[in-house]
Image 1 (cartoon, rainbow over the protein chains, first blue to last red):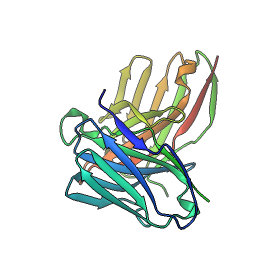
Image 2: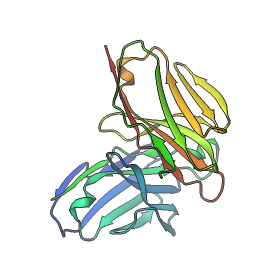
Image 3: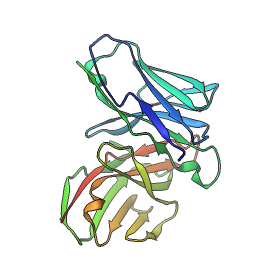
Image 4: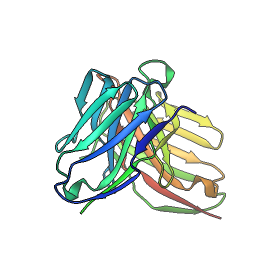
Amino acid sequence: DADVTQTPRNRITKTGKRIMLECSQTKGHDRMYWYRQDPGLGLRLIYYSFDVKDINKGEISDGYSVSRQAQAKFSLSLESAIPNQTALYFCATSPTSGRARDEQFFGPGTRLTVL
Amino acid sequence: QKEVEQDPGPLSVPEGAIVSLNCTYSNSAFQYFMWYRQYSRKGPELLMYTYSSGNKEDGRFTAQVDKSSKYISLFIRDSQPSDSATYLCAMINSGGYQKVTFGTGTKLQVIP
């Protein structure tokens, strides 16, 4: 089955460390997204990319950076992790056109804890 | 004020009950409305999608949109324990890049 995968699934790190979360997809979608999910705040968009050469900031991009290495790969980096970046992180994809254009397909999530 | 408001719950109902989940929104540019279901330790999955006022039915699920009141609902008939999950409403505006705005989610537990 075409899928969205995230690695690692769980990560505990310390303040100040650099962390990379990786996302791969076999859906053939051009659009990819990174969200974080916090209790009471819901899903918030960090960065999104419409193709390999396109990177855009979302509503909460401060403290994060991304890299779109290929159509199928989109990585999220925390250059210097801080405790309030403790959250559940989701990668998502969507097609560019067609009836499913508005649907986002989510990976299983990465639970990140910054001590 | 948040663009989308959703009661976080938790909502606990007995098996077989009718469940009503709701969201209100303030941005009149929202034109497309969705409900995602998120099981514990999983990513959200699209459950229902609609772009017009009125009702849309899919099995035990009915999505209702009232654009004049800026209010959307998801009804679950004959609720099952397998419906226990967090339900997120989501909305897309008609202009620009179709950014998705999610509600905070309502946690539902259906008790056998």
